[in-house]
Length: 418
Image (cartoon, rainbow, N blue to C red; front, side):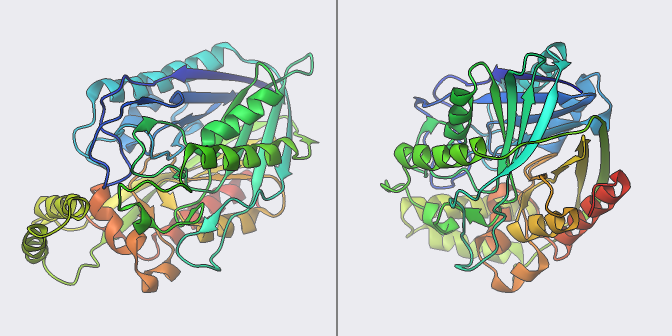
């Protein structure tokens, strides 16, 4: 097969508002590590990852239209770091910087073009790393985890590794709301470890299904600006290098020639779980705001803005895309939104034990899409997150199952199921 890889730096100057934590209202003060776009082209398909919290499907449609590849053959995914500027119009923060949005879009187009220009004959090997024991289910102490660590290595005609694709299902939120340095979080250290072991190679990291998974704290633990010694760059480095070491130790089996791409667009229903009319809730939140501490006031402002925005609008629906690449018999499943581990495991069950990449935050990032089993537990991801994200409601029960069903159907068409 032929493959190419490219990296484009999209790090903006200091001073942009950052995304991912409602408690953080002050802008960035610099960059700890570069924010990048990384494109991996295999045959006539392209997988692109971007060091931002999320990407709007309208931007992604423009990116696909600007490439010379078929629409279904391009997947662009955010790594979901909370250490980057606001990256979506109307979601997860107000007033994204237009120049940064252009840098993301242009960077994706440029990275794909450069990777295509760099294509070379390649041999590809696939393997699965051992569980690095970094991820924790943040909603349930004994909750599910997708412990898979799939790895693809790409070698040129001289046997030199020039690209490595790694995936792991864990929220890149080691750094908390007190951090104001731009960063890819632990993902930076995973890529750094892999690239140090293969000089000249580019490491591409794709985040797995981790909507309910991080390194061991609740979602509400981030509703503070207080520093936490456990959520530091030292911790991000330690955990990232542990994941990187597990990836480097993964076995290798040759991948057969052949590339294919499939995609399906799925309409998902939104719903409102709020028990009272939105104007009533907005009035209550305004009254609470008067005596709230600064962080709580920031949260309430987001909720009030959400209620005012959607008080006269129905929850409606949202259309998302599920993509499947077949890279020589290795499945690459790309899902939109923040997908829980249970859904990722459901898809992995249909594939069997072969190395497979099941990634989320791809083809659009409209927020959490919980499995039906999680609605009775409520909590931030089910009851509240859509107010911060800017969606008119939470995804209705059955939405995650619809995405999984679409992925399983595409895998079946491609002959990639067990």
